[in-house]
Amino acid sequence: MKRYAHGHRGTLQRRLFLWFGGALLLVALLVAAIAHFSQQRDATGFTTAADFVAARFAERWEQDAALQALADELAATINVEIEVRDLDELVARSGSCGDHALRASVRRGGEVVGEIRVCKRHRRAEVIRGAGLIGLFLFGLWLIAGQIAKRLSRSLQETAELAEKIGGGDFSARLEEHHHDPAEVRTLKNALNQMARRVEAHAEDQKLLLASVSHEIRTPLGHARLLIDHARDHGLDERYAGELEDEVLAIDDLVGQLLAGGKLDAIGTELREVDGAAIARRALEAFDESDLSADDDVQLRADPTLLLRALTNLIRNARDHGGGLRSVTVTGSDDEVCFLVRDHGDGLTNEELAQLVAPYARKGGPDRRGLDNADSRGSLGLGLSLTARIARAHDGTLSAESGDLVLRLPRSGPRASPNVT
Image (cartoon, helix red, strand yellow):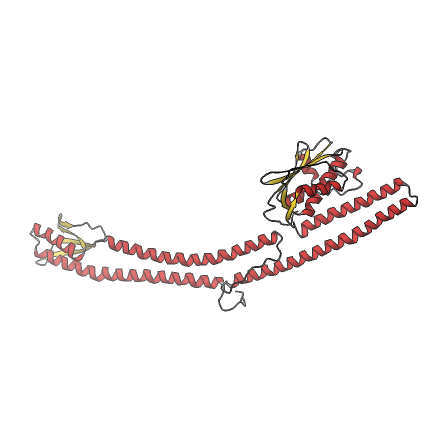
């Protein structure tokens, strides 16, 4: 067995062995003691009582009334049940003995004239006392088992809570190590705490990497747009300048999609209270759109960066593949906030949407069912796929209702915020 260097309290296996071993030893001793005293009483006391009773009955053998009176007297005095028989039939009885009764012969003048059967009378008080002792012993075992179960369940509950916190993005969570924990539990807690520290460090590295990538890629893209404007001023054909600018914007959008996906993979959602209408308005302003209808109360707990990305993708999909954006509507109910994006296209079914949310999905044709087709200048097909992932990360849904795309998110945010794939 592996030895753990965690003090002198021993392993959980050793504790269980000692506790239950001691309990079983106590049971064995108790059973042995009961069996021993029962045998002694049966072997000596009952034999002596039977011989004594037989001698008393021999003195009054031919007096039937006296035999019955003696049977009643002896039964009450020595707490037994007695049956008296001659060679042919029952003569007197006080109680009833079964086949396991102790038997003794009644002799007169050296001859056997009858037989008595003697058996112990089971008193209710003794039965109650025995049942009470057994119940008390079982209660003690229950207390011992309860303490073991309590300690084990507490450690398991703490472990489950740590896993839930880490899954929810709280990478600073740790398990408290108690000195009375068994060695295996302390080893498990130490391993989980080390894992949480590594996850926290990895998440911080990923945040730094994402920020660096965003800066290092988008900075030259911004310079490229300035150079395009400068080239326009120096006579570059407007058609070429427009195409160059569109390509730069497409690259910038692709970088944003990849960074948002990387954030989901590495960090998960970073929740805060946000105004759903304000986020939708920002998404519309990026496309110089303004047709927004919103309820007064559309507050929810969400990751603002990811929610903005999801709405941007839905609006771009409507503009590029739905014949143009018609409107964005934000409504709130008791439990959720709903973002409805309408366009001028033919509409989608949920079956078609299920195909289009697959990463890198491409379908030919000029209509909106041909999401990310050749007309989209080589897009990798990440838009709706990323939007669906963002919805799942918030315990929400992306669906097609009457042909329009609807993003539903719970007001209270997700129960946990695991990395979503």
